[in-house]
Image 1: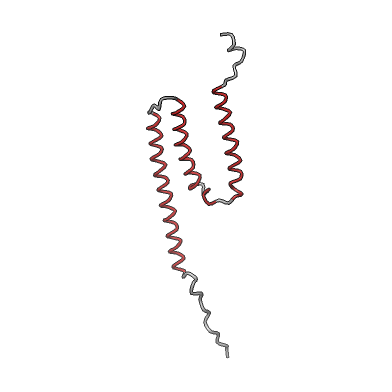
Image 2 (image 1 turned 180 degrees about the vertical axis):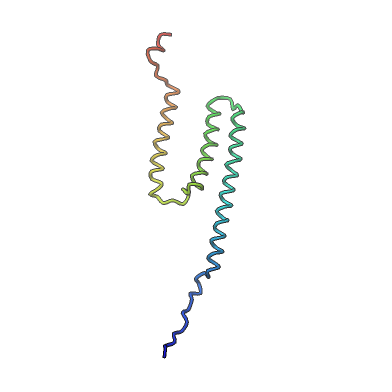
Length: 126
């Protein structure tokens, strides 16, 4: 005679198999909508970038600053959403901040070189 065991009770808080599938389906479309929104925003700002390239803001410096501001916004969206940096841990951000620090220094050196150029002996004989 075999022993009869009571049926295993299921955790009432555990999602059913069909509920888990529905959650995965919802997550997929939520991510898809986010990517489409960000893609649309990037497209709009690319059109804005092209439009701004034909606009004169008075000085080349002003044109460059505005172009860099739009580019920084776009690259921030790409990094945060498409490269999934918005949810990364501190370990990933340390090298990124290190890189941004040195890239900023290189840009600053370029600005210094633009405003205080070093001329060679070829330029001294004008």
